[in-house]
Image (tube, rainbow, N blue to C red; front, side):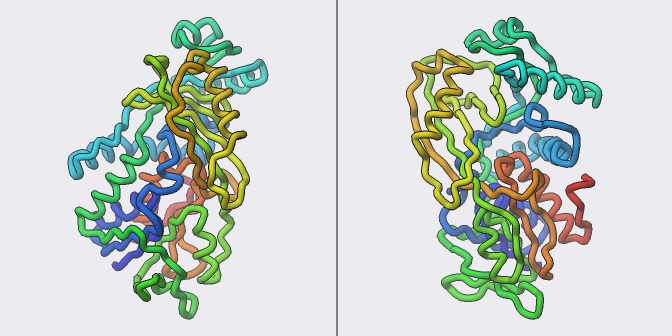
Amino acid sequence: MKVIVVGGGVIGCAVADRLQRDGHQVTLLERDRVAAHASGAAAGLLAPYSEADEPGPFHRLSVQSLALFDDLAARLERDTGVDVEFRRQETLRLALDDAALETLVKRVEWQTAAGLRPRLLTAEQAGAEEPELGEVAGAAVFPEAQVTPPRLVHALARAAAAAGADVREGAPAMSLVERSGRVEGVRTFAGIEPADVVVLAAGPWSPQLALTAGVDLPVRPRRGQLVALEPPRGLLRRMITAGHLYLVPKPAGEIICGSTEEEAAFEAHATVGGAKLLLEFAMRAVPALKDSRVDRLWAALRPAPPGRLPIVGPSEREGLVLATGHNRNGIIHAPLTAEIVARGLAGDWQDLERL
């Protein structure tokens, strides 16, 4: 089957890699460069437990996708020589006040009842386990993982190409080619690229392309800002999260602090307000970070769906498959998204609500 994948972020590259290994003839079209947008502006925190508010489809999707990373990372290093820096690591979830502690206690309770093993810590215990920690009301430890997103995306693209996929950068899709209710390809500057199936994985730009085939896709851009810090010494043993904010120590020694979640249309620039929010959180969580060098501040647009779950599956137009709406969870959800698309093209589409 000839498949065009539109979008060279982590979702598009994971899908291209998976489908090419299944024997499809894959062409990946990326408007700029692989990992140029949201996938390159991510810390790589893989946190299905510390960030799960409750059991349900979103939590199951995250847990099942994380389970695929061990084999995926090993295969990519074997086939491409790229170490994606995947490693199992604990996350310390902070409760910065009493209300947050109450919520955290409930999170630990339902996960413990489900057979998981988070550890609830008093403020004193948290300080003993992370000596540089600032003042907290309490904390909990969750067994999770991390990866380095640009390395992951480039390795997926390289693996797809090595298997025979045509990976094109600087190749924007102008519109979808639709005839009699069926999508038959993609129009580019070079002309029409025919396909049996088009997989739309263009992040927040997916709705614009979907509309050219008459498909109304409820995905909007949401800006996320991050700052990379270079501390004077190693400060953290674990990844740190609190609310939607996090600190992720990377293997090279830097700490990635993120992330804002802003309704900012298509304004992808970093802002003073975003930097202030992130730096204040970093210094509150780990006061010694005040002596860190700010290495870079950047932002990207993420594809936000109406609810929590991404949009993965066949569209109302035959020949058009949707793989977008992952918001800030594209990195962790990429392996399972690729599996769902591969199984779907083989005739077994899965409902994300029932995974």
